[in-house]
Length: 399
Image 1 (tube, one colour):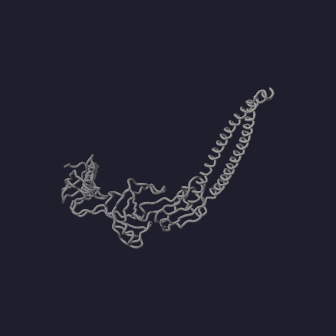
Image 2 (tube, helix red, strand yellow):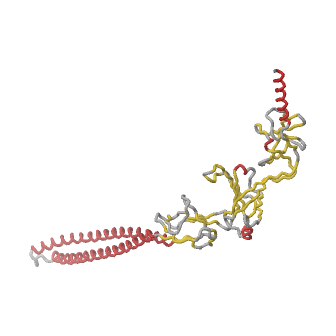
Image 3 (cartoon, one colour):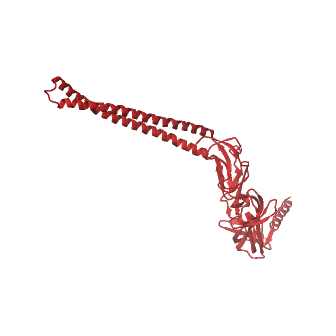
């Protein structure tokens, strides 16, 4: 029984040793190294101008007509026309109120003229009576009776006081007239300002294309697009106008496949449907990956390549055209590389396991360019060495 256990133990050890020696290996050699990324994308405009419903305030606009979605428009062309019934009604009321203010101003001027005419007549009569009374006062006492002279003195005092009162009343009437005129003018200016704003809004109910481009409607929060006859708020975005003078090729790929992606890398692109091929260069790489849909947690990285204007004009490119491309991430000649699965990271450096016959050694290496599947070895290995692709867990001699 004991002999059987010993034989079974020896068999397990020999199997273990055989597995260790049969790990997959690779002979290090200098050769060409190329890694590509295949992606799909579409042509987009680098700059998109938002198109908003014209006007200000809160009064809604009714969409009367617009060019079809996806239409090519020219600078200055009318893209959409709106109407504002509430603003038209408010303008009519403002014009009526302005007419009322004009009539009130005329009535105030007439009242002022009438009051001044009445005061002028009273003042003229008082002046005449005062002159006559003063004649009696200054006359010879022996000519008139005592009572006549006393009445004249009383008339002079009364008429002088009345003249002072009438002068004061004239000033009060003028001050009151000025105050009413100022109030009326202020009310008139307020109504006129509102009328001017309404006229300005009603004169700008057409949405004009700021530049050449392709008109694209935007979806609202519920996924619907603007329709003829629908109500829209002033300033609300209804579409986008991509600028056709500057187009880019836009691509996206899962975050895990974006290893090594950077600006300056060459792109070999092929237009879908036509088979036309163009050579581009990566000009922009997104700073972070984002989720495209709430239904999937996968994050995607975005990158772009400028399309020269001569290519745009020659091929008559338009936003929305699909294309496929190959990005050359790494392309080197005569370089030592090892598969990434053979690398073991320890603290701030990497090592690989080499095998010479039955002897296994763990060697420190200095890495250069790192790719998605392989990495460049700048120092630590030489051609002809055999490396273990699946590093063992047991310790080995270190160099």
